[in-house]
Image (cartoon, rainbow, N blue to C red):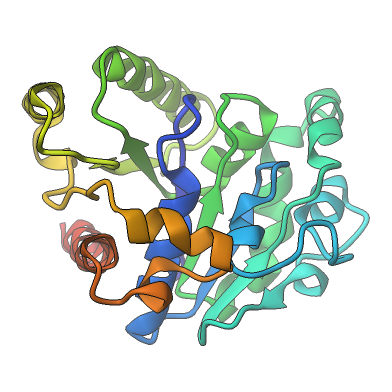
Length: 259
């Protein structure tokens, strides 16, 4: 059965896209079939995998509006086993369409049904807002990962996000679970980083991934070269951290299936 994971946080710049790209690459490296869907109109997931913005006619826009099928809008990447459904600047206009449609919250879920058998993991990179696109991702997913930069007010923001996720779970998707909170851009040199980590772990316990993603130059540089950190510098601290997160994801999902 396909595992569908959304990456969500209402705050921008916390590493959602970087995490989606590198976790997808890590899962593909252990022979998993992975589809990454870019739901952010900025299109950074595609850029980070070497696609020139707006150069591809394929995108998730046509899939959401019903003008095109999911199977016709999937592209292969340079990473074996990793495919992408790119974004489009037009996504910024699709939200009103989804809101006007009575079944708009399930538009993505219904459109993807045909591709489920072809993948082990479908990863949904959400925009930094709890709008119709993120809601579509969360009604489609069975799990959500919350990337979190350990900074002031982070705990307040994540509690608000978790409440929104619970609301979607109650109203539209009872199968949705929070797979984990992932601390990103982690810098041990700052006392505030450790303080926020302690607060988050105290509040959310085992839901927080054991692995943290360090603030790492190689991870930051990789998108400008159009390749994931694992291919840019496999031995970097950031790349190795994402490999460990992939192991945690696989183990968490296997444990939940056994329960």
